[in-house]
Image 1: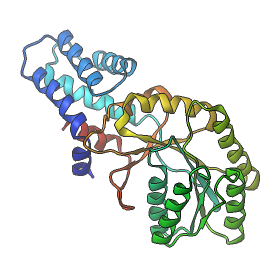
Image 2 (image 1 turned 60 degrees about the vertical axis):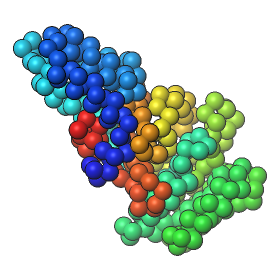
Image 3 (image 1 turned 135 degrees about the vertical axis):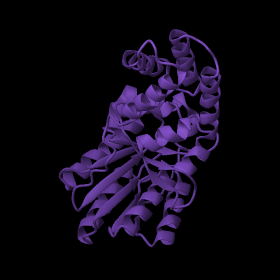
Length: 297
């Protein structure tokens, strides 16, 4: 996993390492070194507020005699601590269990849902998919194709149908067939559109009414390549849908990985999964230690 992450975080790592290597080869005093580290974090797409918090903690934990190498090690440990603040474990009590995937158009929800379906089915769970994005015919077709490929049943509705009604039908089918887990692909919400967010809340209420305690997980899919815009999206979604964690997608060579630190710090949300490619097997559980090592190695 570490090698894959190093490759996927290539652009972010390059920007951060260049600044740190300049720092390590200089004879700057500690105050100047800390200022340079803060600048390096911001250039790696960490928000101003989060970067300042990180540097403050590094400063508190450092000694005046610490050199640049010691400061870099303190920085690594602080990043690991920050990313470990919230438990990334998936909570799917049941059966039956329900997981909702939410996010804006183009973020990779449908493919991410298919990766989870493959993961859970491979682990012995009996999985069903619900194509609740009825606003785009292509979305239902895409999920249907994934269902065929993975040999997983898919509940679909007519184009333009009420998404909540599709989810209701899926929940009834899940219970009737005594399956373990329902994975719901929701419409690509425009995060500033209240009406669409209210539709998502309607889906939540129906699921909770039909299966007490569900949905156990609501994952927000965020495109890693959009940097701080991912944080803006997450803040808006958090107002409406009770998100329990992040599924980070499009973690490729252009990813602006520093935004992950800001998401965890400012929103209190754990990163639960990372998509590292287009195959159903390109899915990794998030590890704070491995992410930091890949970011700074």
